[in-house]
Image (cartoon, rainbow, N blue to C red):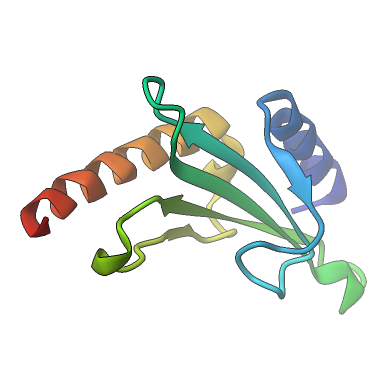
Length: 119
């Protein structure tokens, strides 16, 4: 990903309420994250988070550009373990934020259904 593409994606994320964090919350190797929490409308509890991780390959080799990956972290009961969805930065669909947020919601709903089997 070129710098101009990254800057466009970052401005779109900020417009949609994603917050930037320079100490990665998910992977210490990422340069920084953009994170948005999605809450249950009735109870104001976090259901899941979408994390856009930015990888700055320029700091290792000039001309390498930037990478982006997306992680979906559903809030699940501790006793059922953690289930994450990782979308690789090579996927050009990552810049379609609407599509990513739809995938995140469907993944969360799927995890909820699976959890009901074990609770």
